[in-house]
Length: 155
Image (tube, rainbow, N blue to C red):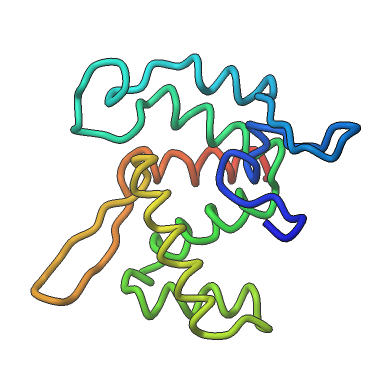
């Protein structure tokens, strides 16, 4: 829209959009997009609605963003580390986003936090616990392993 590519497939570089010689938009799948699409998905391939994505898809996604979308990966790791350090409520995690991106408006930080925690949950890295209207987040074993793997890579 408005000469900007939007949407997860394009942002993740799973598709490439360009205009042909006549100005018509064309879309094509990239090699990483094809690799991801080739992985077995529990919903699409097994009609299993327990998880949105498979462990193999989650592993591919994390590897892909660590290699191609460094800011997204760093933000994901920062969020996991914040939860590990006891910042488990939506408001606390929004403050973490604001610390990382100080020029961001609070509403934008809330949207970033909401979408990021949803992705991390679908990836099997964090859990949500509801108590009435309150929500808190915790790390799964895979989330803890992801932090540990990232620490060993960088340290």
